[in-house]
Image 1 (cartoon, rainbow, N blue to C red):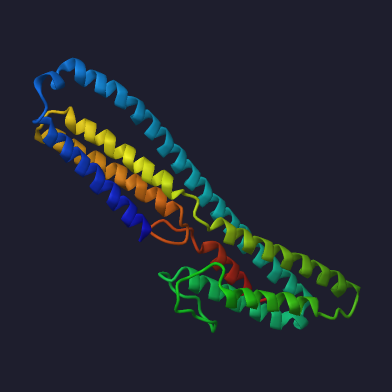
Image 2: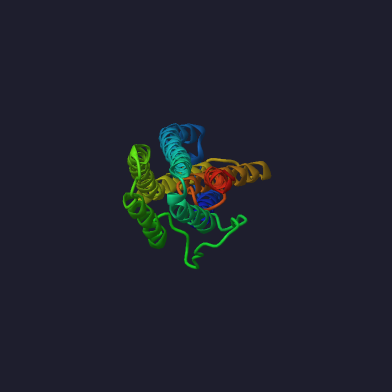
Length: 264
């Protein structure tokens, strides 16, 4: 919902400032509407236009980079889970209970994070409150898996070395999970969004103040306002990779789950 509010506020402020500029245009004296005055104002405001475009581009690039980073870490997390399951398979029947817990965790994480998508088959905990990467019960389930791995009692040298690999793999899973938690924090500064919105309002206010009042100008203002509002929507939506219209794909974790479910 945050992205809808941000885009809506930008749209309303830009249109309102343009309307105020168009209304005030009729109250200006003739010398204030001369060609020299209009050119001077447009020259000065072009500096603000350039600066606003630069900041808008930098913010867009920043949130896109953050989104791609989260997506990459999610793929790495799914890869670590798949590798862990593969090593548990190699260990044999002594690790079957651990594999069952890993399957429960993966299915529950998918169902909790991507609630608009079909849920995985099987029995696992389902949560009613808002989704969270840092879900405490799921974190506790991962901790149980780690404890069970460390409690394995290898019967020979092969299983002993494999148990050491399992501990290392589990450490990688924990590390990737916390990297995901950190990556999910908002990267957009609210003051920057507020300032940028103010700059856009000033730009469109001056545009309305110095433009002729006709349907072509009105249509141009509306289309530009919609375009800028959609850009702000995109920025805020990309800043929340698990919420909104643009989300990271659940395919990596679903692929990991399918590997866990695959027959030996």
